[in-house]
Length: 411
Image (cartoon, rainbow, N blue to C red; front, side, top):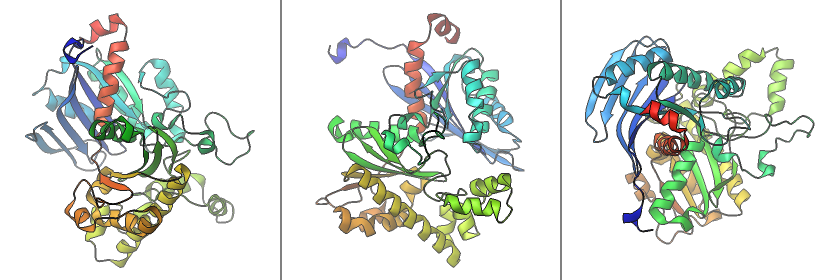
């Protein structure tokens, strides 16, 4: 069948909602044969004395940028919808896709949200306590405002669901493990986008190479991906594991955690809050969990925290490359991965001799897409990720598979 003979998909408008612990990211797409972003916006500072709410067109034109008060996610989403209705017919939105951090062992692909699915997801809150409550609040608030749309969830754990068993195991004896006690991995929507983007840029064969992808942001992880499948990833049972992050600890010796509870008398709930909210770059520096802030600081604790982050990232990179038996391409993404050249250099340059990387420091400092030299044995790149785009693409599949009655309701 030629391109001219390809059946034309009906155009729909799909809204994507990414509800974080203190923020919302929202995007609107026109979805047919192509998936095209038409608007994006965000609410930051939810729960603080003042939040910022902004939106822009796909061409970068500001639609609104204002300060407001949003005590929680439902208020933030309703405030955003109220402003959005001035520019967009909300009744014309066919589907709403929600980023959900954890899908557990059973939800390994995008799912239409039903009462049963939502009840199952609520049971997963203890597995991702920093993220799941906000994710679920966003679902409830969006359904109240857009009751006729098809609502569906896309899970950050899905991309890693077919990891080899050796990578899924925890090290505990089999009688202690069950479907919920295993290594899951996260940031899957970002990794899925990076693999699809590579296939579009360089071809399917290249996208099946041995890839080390570093998603570095306030949450940070790395994944070894070969043949478009996860071989292993730095995060595991929880989104605490692996690299130190903005406020999350990363890997901590479990014996140390037992010591703090048993010998030092730490309450588990206090320790949980410390590991999720008071550790990582914030705890190491005593200043901030924001990499941009730490890079500007003259405080030696800031540079020491960043050096610790880069050191742990190199360790994770080496382990993940070993899991694949080598590497063909390294891709940095996420806010830090895309915009912090000194962090990229601190990770890559010490690995150069070991993995045949000829790092191009000048290209890296200029922020170019390719930051390895032409004769490098490993290509090193920076790529902008787009989790909302992946959610919209899954939405096209979800809507096409939906019952005809539901399609009529959503139209």
